[in-house]
Amino acid sequence: QVQLVESGGGLVQAGGSLRLSCAVSGRTFISYAMGWFRQAPGKEREFVAAVSRSGSVTYNARSVKGRFTISRDNAKNTVYLQMNNLKPEDTAVYYCAGKSTYSSDYVTPNEYNYWGQGTQVTVSS
Image (cartoon, rainbow, N blue to C red; front, side, top):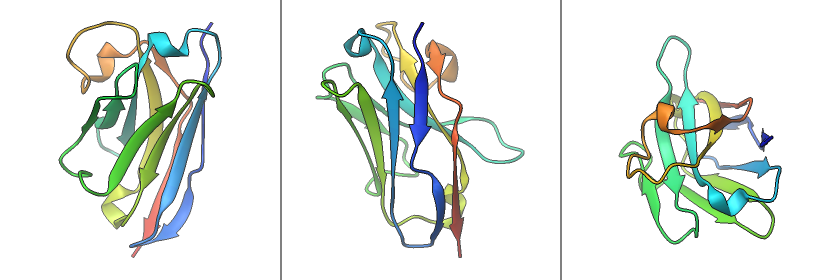
């Protein structure tokens, strides 16, 4: 059983930074491409960023490009999301997810097999 546990959320002022972490249990972390998604109240879950199994390739949503950076440490079974220059519209519950398939679709939530419980990020104006 694979478990994902997010941490690092909180309340921050606009322009500030947060670093989210997602610790993944199990020995097969490198088998999964990893992604971050977010969901604001009343909205659908949306793609934020993804990273390939090796960590060499990353994908970002247009809304966060230049501000958010995804990375992974395969030795620590952990994926990170560094969020800089946060805006009030970034307020949401952030989820990490693991994808075992080798499809080229990294943005569709249904492509991901495993999900964490989410961590709240609130950005005040």
